Image 1 (cartoon, rainbow, N blue to C red):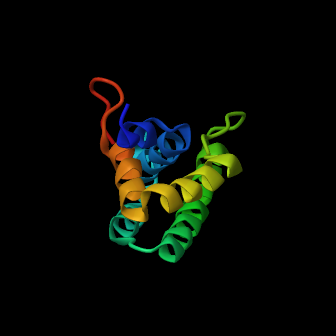
Image 2: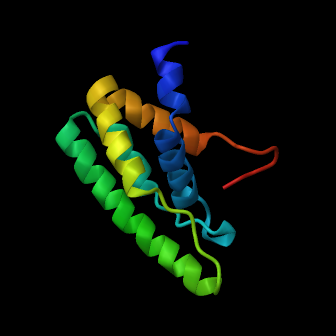
Image 3: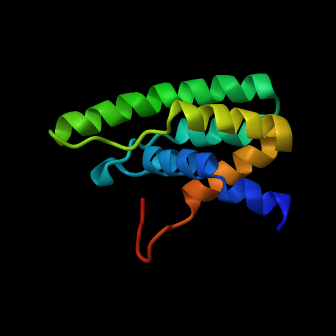
Length: 118
């Protein structure tokens, strides 16, 4: 199996991709319309920048998730775990920042179910 397949299939990459998909989704459908995070991930080149962009993304995403939880009492929103964060940073060191960002964005921009739209 190729190394790129292993990276793309990594659960941490999948979880951050799902979080980004939720973040860039339309507010009508539970999203945040956070296109800034998508653009920032697209332009990251160095590990230090990657960590800063992830921090900003997680801060925005947390605010979005809290808003969603207020609008849907008794339900909790999806959030990547600390383990996912550590794993994604480790993967960026191993595979390179650009490749990891591309994998996260690929997960975010692909429809997981027929007819799903953001």
